[in-house]
Image 1: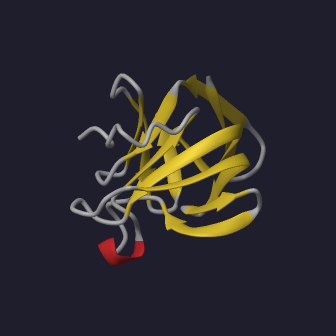
Image 2: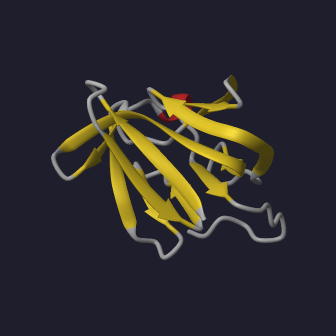
Image 3: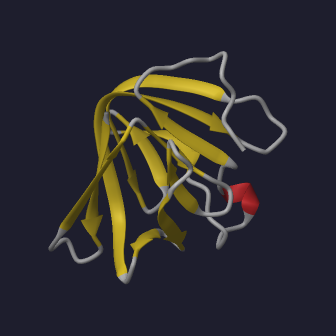
Length: 129
């Protein structure tokens, strides 16, 4: 089970959520394995109800599968001991890995189409639409 810990914009509160996998979609949503919308990305923050969170982290091992555009094949990254995002940029073990999480409010050239966080990497399964 993966556990995402979100930090408030002001740094005063945390929110944790768990799932077998998480998918950051091109529509700016964060979805769990059942396609349930966990949060929505608004500019460089994650919105849960009326609360905004600027960053999150996930302790691993965690694997990433990402697609730059809808038509490109996914690339596999990891495993990482720690994956985190600050301001929409994704880091693996404290190093920026060149991936910006999808959002509707940025130029599409600046963000990736889809990013998945997984417990294990099953390269034979493409990301679900």
